[in-house]
Image 1: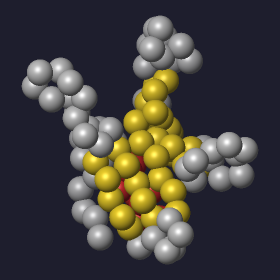
Image 2 (image 1 turned 120 degrees about the vertical axis):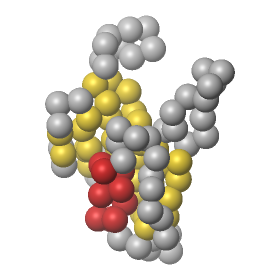
Image 3 (image 1 turned 60 degrees about the vertical axis):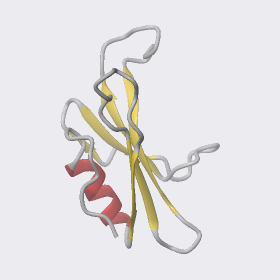
Length: 98
């Protein structure tokens, strides 16, 4: 666990077998059929082969209720990717990118 504000958690998945990311942004929510564990993945970050860092974050639903395209960003450092995910978790907009 890297950060936790009681609603959102930023967790590292480095070294977790089968993980496709280096970390995830998770939001706690009610238990339901779509969220049986009481949480949902809102974003993730991972290192690219060129050394840069990729982060993605779910977008707010569109006016008609359909999911928006995820926000994506490329960052120079892991810290930049983490800070942008965490700082923009409630707005669901990654903000500053490379």
